[in-house]
Length: 93
Image (cartoon, rainbow, N blue to C red; front, top):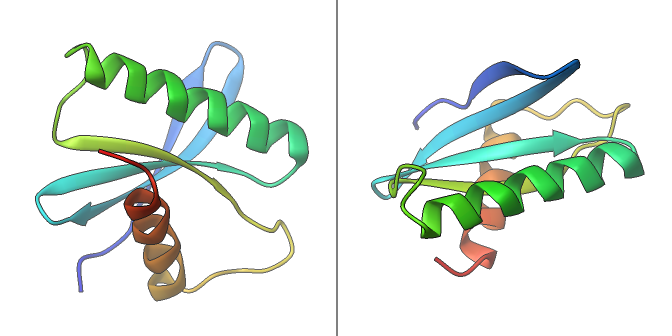
């Protein structure tokens, strides 16, 4: 099973953790949020990424999604991968 890779990205003064997972020729980029404010930020980042992808400003082989992750519950790699793939499949291409 392909691994889930964690990345830390600096967006101005804000540090954002993202995850990527390969899926059927695509790479799913997941922006993660735990609090309501972080989830809203993750949704904005994913929406902006997808808008840029549709305008050919981002790689066509990378799809962005937003995920809410509990700050108190640690997910296994398999659980996290399952959540990312499910979120990617729930969104239109």
